[in-house]
Length: 345
Image 1 (cartoon, helix red, strand yellow):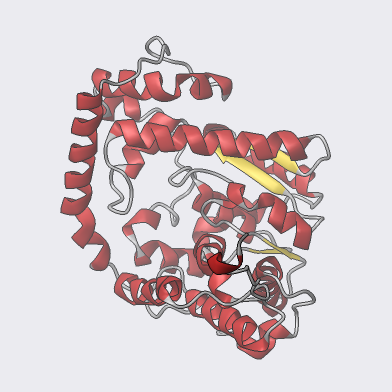
Image 2: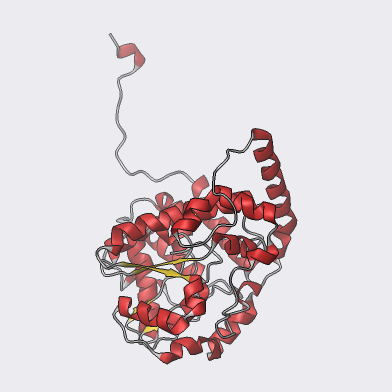
């Protein structure tokens, strides 16, 4: 669980280098399929269930996408591993297929917004372990501002980061005491990679392997790093200085604004503040101005996404998924009959 641009793909590659784990690219099944889940109808009905399986597979097989899985599974492969007809079971079955293909004992799921689905995941996989990976939100902001699909204004980036840390912490609080959640800071992973991974392996109850730090030497990692500019550091050793970049990249005014919005969360996670964290509500005119700046910047950058290999193909699949919301909603319960107005006394 993490905010985007928090080092989660680095950690995925490290874990995937472990001989007992598989760590496929994240097709973001939870986020996209949860949104349209009601439109498949009751999953006890074969047509809706088959449609869900087909759409889930499609998200893992987008041609040219950096998120494409290297194994082309079939609907029959997934159906054979689903014991209960639920979204959680379908997603788990897909990851199970991937792990089985590599003869691994377990798998790593690094999808966006997993903090929203943690307890659903536990329903399907009671033995699941959750890693809460956090990064200084001000550095997250520096990285996010290079991603066209995200908010671009510091105010909205800070709001999102604060909300996502709150969600992660809620899950962490619930699961930590039962040994099912661990907090790992990105900065600790950079400064002390081996001790951090040893502690992580202890939490996962697996033996630490030195090849976890040789993740960047794997051929698959080198290919992944070349697929998208957002993964360009994956084929490099741990970049120990890839932290506190906001000190050089953000203006004092931007740092102050971020800390006003998310200062208490930064402090709670051990990140020192440069300014007072006192929150001051924005005047309406200033909020409107920030919103307009954010929208214009996102619009200016939008075309960059479609230029990346596989982006346009993936967007077509997502548009098809969103199109389900325009269809007639399936019936979940028999219709009630109300007396007409004429029959009222």
